[in-house]
Length: 108
Image (cartoon, rainbow, N blue to C red):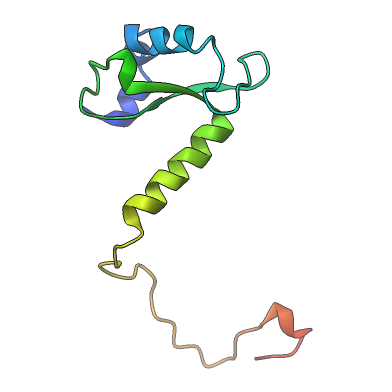
């Protein structure tokens, strides 16, 4: 299943588990307790094992800010011990010195 198309579908928006989690949370963020009248609420997947067939316990109601912060923490934990396989930046052989904005206008 394509995650992006599923999250934008009416099946996700109106799904039993998503609507159930919103109701159970009282339409409030489970982290900061802000309500839907104060901030945009989103529903976070705690697991993707049943994507498209979620259970209420697979989901957590979060505001957009808490969702962003929690996702960042999860990604940092997941990828903290990994070395990059390759660098996706090209090496630049520059004959002109690069400008350092912290050097008060002097070339570095």
